[in-house]
Every structure is written in structure tokens, then in C-alpha cells.
Length: 274
Image (cartoon, rainbow, N blue to C red; front, side):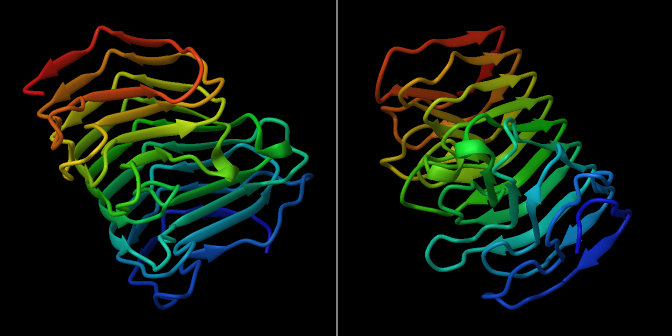
């Protein structure tokens, strides 16, 4: 019932299924108890599991920094109708002022999703006071052979595309590898379209990340500045053979400005065959 005082560690879950319209084939928690310790969710392998909207796991009413550590997600495709192919649902209580969620040393391998606002990662992240000041940290993770299948807008291996529940979510991506990631419309590795949050991308490697549509919006990283977005920083990254199928858009990085005046820093990065 509670995600607190729970250890979910060292498990291998293969072919768990709730049918294409079911959800939470791996685990579903109901609530948390603020007096107890946060869940330890680490060292798991989740392989070829099936479900619908929230296919794998649901963490509602979180009151703490939720971390998924050293866990592998592989061999899964979620193309639920209505562009609702989400894998993971994370919801903080409305009383939490600065919700925080992290993926640390995780691997995403042969993963597909059409989650409209949740990237190929299929993350539905919500909660906190007025959905403000939410933050997602992705550190030392590997995204390989990942495909984002929503054709209506940009998106990729991870990130946000503008929606109410995530429109003020900061994102930090550090020390990760993105290899053979693809999407239809752009941002095949990282897509960031939010209202008033900051993106920091440091010490990452992008290899053969591609956007495939002739009218795509950009290559490996796609940023759309909306309203009061703080300065975006891309630093100490390597881009190799990152390609946009639209020659009018950037192969490695595309940044456009829908509103306001914003700052982008690209520092000490290497670009090869882009």
C-alpha cells in the first residue's frame, strides 16, 4: 500500500502484463506515510512488460525525493491509443513546495513510447504546489535504441513537451549516454518545452541521434523557449553523427524562441559529423 518503509531491490520482472489497456504491471503504491523512510527502488531489471497508461509503476502522493537507482528498463513498446503510452507515473502531494525525482545510473534499452508529453521514457510527472518548481534529475544513465513515436510534436528519449502537469519542471541531465535514439519530429535525445523552468545538460554523449521526418524541428536536442525560461546551459558534451532530416533545422541542437528574451550557453562541446 505505502511506498514508504518499502525496499524494492534486486528484482527481475519479465513479461509482467496487465494487457494493453491495464496499468501498473510491476507495482502500484497507494499512498505514503510522512513519518516513514522513503522507498528504496534500486538494482532491478524490468524486461518486456506490458500495460497501458502507466504501464509499469505508479508512485502517488509522494512527500520525499523519489529516486530510481541502477535499474534497467528494456525491450518494451507502449503505443497506447490517444498518445497515452506512459510507463511511470510520479505524483507529489500538493503540499510539497519543491518536488524532486531522480533516475540515477539507470539503463533504457530498446524502449518505445508515444506518450504525448512524457518522451520515450514515458514519464508522467505531476504534483507539488500549483505544479511549480518541480525538478527531474537524470544522472549517469544510458539511453540506447530508444524511439519516440508521437508524430504530433517534438520529443525524444527524455524531456517534456508543454503540458499543464509538467510545464514548470526543471531538468538536469548529466554524465549520460544517448546512442541510436530517434524520434519523428525532433529532439530525439532531449526535448524541453516548458513555461518557466531551467534545463542543464552537462558531460553527456550523443551518438547517432536522429529525427526522421522531413518537417522535423531539430536533431538531438530541441528547446522551445516559452515565457520566463531561465538560461539553458549545454556544457562539456559530445555530439557524433546527430542528424535532423530537415536541413533547415540544427542537426545537434535546435533552440527557438516562442516568447520573451532568453539566454543559451553552449560551452566546450565537440561536434563530429553533425
